Length: 318
Image (cartoon, rainbow, N blue to C red; front, side, top):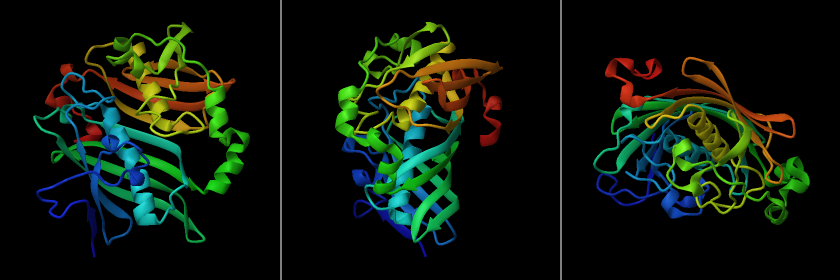
């Protein structure tokens, strides 16, 4: 038996966003998901989304969608299915352990109308304790207007408010976090990191050309949509993406893949540093460090879609 969900009374004709609470956003305009279906067989789901032709933060480049718009779509899927399919209460904290994605840049053209996106979701290693979700691995395959466009995998844990407070200790005080947050250092030039506006730059210059300071603007309407007591995951992934652009500047450059491990929380009252090491070919290793400890490590693949042909599609997606 299928359990299909959407907002509206004729989903063949109408579409609108799911309730913002289900995707942990405060702004209705930032909700990308439009509905979901939980299938009878195992832990399989279908999630539907609509992408605007122009997003306020995840801007298209060279008439192609920003892969980070795909990442944000997958991120919204985590709380949606956690709440609706696995009974996670509101107020719980979903904490990433690992995240990876890969996209086919030739399958990401911006169409003449808002794009319809469908995610085929399979959840594995679902751990339940005392009728409560502990952790799971979510695999997503994305189709953009019917064409296979990308894949992503996220491993994450669910923590109750009480357990989260114990883990965070005094760092959990949101008022104190805002009082003690570092002032914003001057941003890099927007064009150097693939953006047009200084307010969207999350990196500041460092002492080396391969190392930058993280900029965490607690008033940013997208990256800090709601108060948090640490640097949010999407900010860190955006920092990784911007570091790749800064290290390998190209007007049509795109980060087509990431494999990221989250080791520690990045605090907002201490400097943190984003460093790049070339791995050969189109691959980079990027780390986020704070207080001599690595908080995040990523392997990143870059490409210039304008130089690709149909024969050079990402092998894993063809």
